[in-house]
Image (cartoon, rainbow, N blue to C red):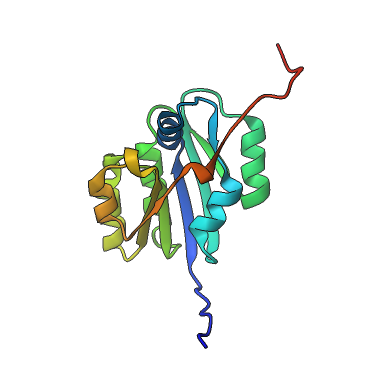
Length: 165
């Protein structure tokens, strides 16, 4: 009989919202496909403790309802970015490196390879969560672990009837 081992790790999840949204839109063929955080976050954490969840997004206005939901369920926050999320996400990851055991970067962008290398040199476990088909192979190879985001991790949003403006 094997005994279950309690893994006491503190995890930060940093999401490049535009990258992940673009990936699931490309794979699903639907622009109203959205990440289902209710199923994805527990899968990523795998019984580890969540320290931070930060969703970085550039461009269009971020839904207040989405931001409230992330905060309500995960004490998460949404960070609007002037341009790309690359720099703000990288700065936050570097700031968190001494405060967490693991950082999960939700993005398949090869621009994060140097960040992954740096975080690992600081003793942080780095995991990538992304759609495999749209993820740079070098990013998967550099990470300590890769979580594939599949169609089970998103849903297609349909607006309720009667909300025409």
